[in-house]
Image (cartoon, rainbow, N blue to C red):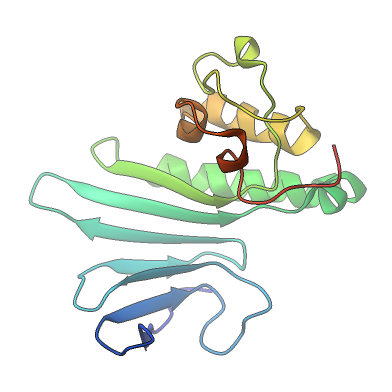
Length: 172
């Protein structure tokens, strides 16, 4: 892994041009993470693994935005092989620790987790508008957020229940 060459893509009508940075390189669509930015955006990209990548954009001489894109192991994978989940969070924490305190940090992705509605256990990391019942991946995500002083911002604002998640799960 490392820096990958971006692929130029466009909207269907061809009017807007973008650059797609992918953690597995061009042509591999079965795994990986990706970032898409408007063509001409001056940013750095680093593919860490097929589950993590980092993009950085200097806004001005004082501010840089760091975006970590993550794809956590699914719940069945995590429960059948906890080492995979443990390795994922260790790698994610190592990345977060390397980010300057002056950077604006955004960690986004699919964490394959349910964090539940019980915000009392993690009041510094989760809001009152969670969904579902906490599962083991959700517990690991909340523990990571707690260690890194991060907040699950999508739980801070009231949304329709249908808008609180991007996918409905059949598994608790």
